[in-house]
Length: 472
Image (cartoon, rainbow, N blue to C red; front, top):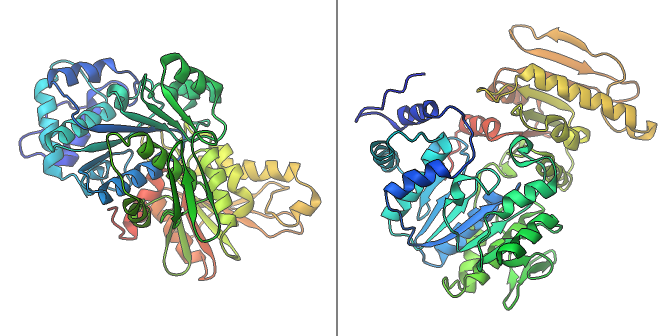
């Protein structure tokens, strides 16, 4: 790959393409490289810093914190990853996306000062966000941890408060294959003597132990903070603060009160530094938005977008789908990365889907549509072997080898019909791209059906873009 430094007239896309060529590995955890480059710029991080890690729920918690703090009148920076459509989504200042010019300016500074130290794409862009935040004189920055915690680039800063939303299996090649191992990695965003919020109802003991070892001020859900609610409103209760009579957050999903309570616990813990009135909490929770997280678009057929890409998130998505009204058929557009627990994700949703549209994803980690379709068929077959005859009468399964045919006038599109006796058929079709898969789903779905798009940011983003929806 070329490593020619972008010119003075280079676009943001030119720069991002360049960053992908700099480091020998797309993902290489560690703080030495980014720490060394940051030291050259003498960053001081002169604002309140809240880091948010966890397996799922990070994006929602960050979005709620940003909305509440903005409603309180603070100048707020938000750094998240990955993005759905445009890279600029990752860096927000006072609720506005960073401009191409602002980002490129920081890239140019890093390039001129990093010397012979190579940075990964994520390290480079994380440092650019920190530099941009320092330039704009923020009051507070909300920082989403990218992968794990201990060696993630965001962990180069000493957070004034750290949140771990949940701990479950994901990125096992990097973080370990048990909740205890992963919990230990995520716990390293905690700091001695500072608030450490854990919203996982059953936290790994490794997380609790690490917080004790370093002397962090550990806040546990169910012990130090909690929530309650009825059909109309909910309440937060912390160590010494209660917020009651609140409307439910604008974000949909069964776990959003858990995420909201974690955000409010952090705000309570930071009261000496951040004053947040009750009205700001109400306004923030009412106005918060986060595309791609149980996002339901208006119109018919119903279209649901969710970036669920691990079994834990897929299980929550399944529960949320069950809470919706009745739909005769569910058409699922799915695309996944090959290093995920693909079968585990599909298994959580298999009983709810009648038509599968398996999309290929680009890049070295992307999985082809045909390979994904093969896993979907295997999951269906496995379910057929385990479920009772009563369940088989209700669910779509396979009890014989499926027939595979080339779709007419659609080169590269393969359709597999799986038809067991005494059950409706499920159709599994593979496509080259998420947009192609979604287009076909729109053709096949009736106005009374629903279309679910899930599996990855790289699946939801292109479909959202195709629909002309901007992420703001």
